[in-house]
Image (cartoon, rainbow, N blue to C red; front, top):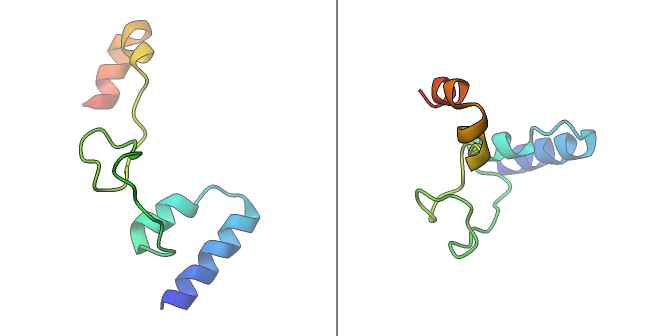
Length: 71
């Protein structure tokens, strides 16, 4: 299973469709190192980020739709 999932990751990588990271989050392959000191996950630096964080400027320029997206 590990070999199949790694091959799938390689196929997606060379196709350039951007599906590699969600595929990794779903399967855990290939194994990426996680450095808590450089993790961009502000909630818990010991896990991989699962969702894009909206920039702070979005709160000021578009507060209504920002709140809808957060909700």
